[in-house]
Length: 83
Image (cartoon, rainbow, N blue to C red; front, side):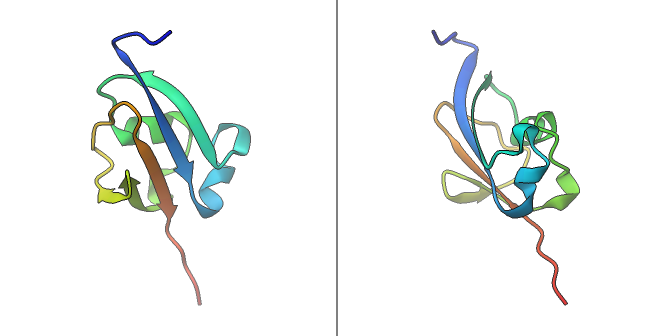
């Protein structure tokens, strides 16, 4: 049952970001409150914002303050350092 104030989204953590999230999963299919921003969900899943390089919403680069809609796929890409 879907309530009018809830939406279903998919959050995909790339690279080492999956190790921070609850359950240490790469893909999270979750139901959230309507009008939540991407940053709110990332924080709720306990992934550190300072480790994030790029956020994609339905394969397009967006800001972490973007509001999510029903069925969105959010990909969160980490900062990669090398030497």
